[in-house]
Length: 335
Image 1 (cartoon, rainbow, N blue to C red):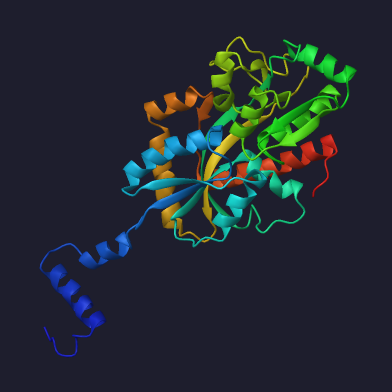
Image 2 (cartoon, rainbow, N blue to C red):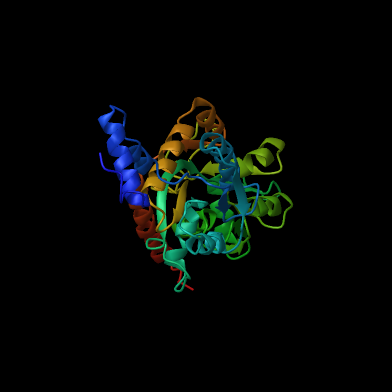
């Protein structure tokens, strides 16, 4: 075998691999090519577009802890609240597409594309969906001072005093906002929307009597429900939750066909290599399928449910279409 002229990097590696193959060894060059650069190479930050303490934040921290253990790098949850997630979405959309910046996207964040005429990002163009994580429901809760104990009484009171009562949400376009607008439209009532920076903040405002009612996640409302500082009237999904089996749905309470749920999923900036998206998806599926995680999510009335990246992409597109239907029904105008 001739060695002269083969000491440039490419020639030497090629010849060395050929030599090892002749000697009956496995091809180390093929192994190196398939491995690629190590990921993750540094801590990963997971943005949450809402304030700490709400359902999205609680889920993000639960998942981040397990992702850290499986990926071998710390996953840091970073809250960038405001504009129902739009601030965090802009940060992620403009981050390097290397897989080290992710976002826990809530269904409410998708609504911004239908509510706002101008956004610094495009929800379908600028993000790479990784996987759906959970499906959940919201709960209609009122301050105990409000003299109502069921949905029919609330509707009757609101109809008798149009414009007097208000409801809080995690921001314009959030899940609670759309749930409230759908409630107003189907019940034929006039209530004032009061947006906050996050679900936990709106729940705190409700518990202190600053607002009259809200549609938060069960995770955010449950501690107040247990202490009696909030009164629950109904859940927003089409079926009851095993966590609160005696609590009726809005559909059962007289608003036939009412069905508004919330979901959370993981997205990355557009352009992240497919191999990294695939790795993240497989780890997410592994983490969410564990009994401990499923039980923790179930205690928040969240249904653990993963997907492929393409399935999550299709879900986001369906959500956008559904949001536009609610906007039209409620007579909302894009800002």
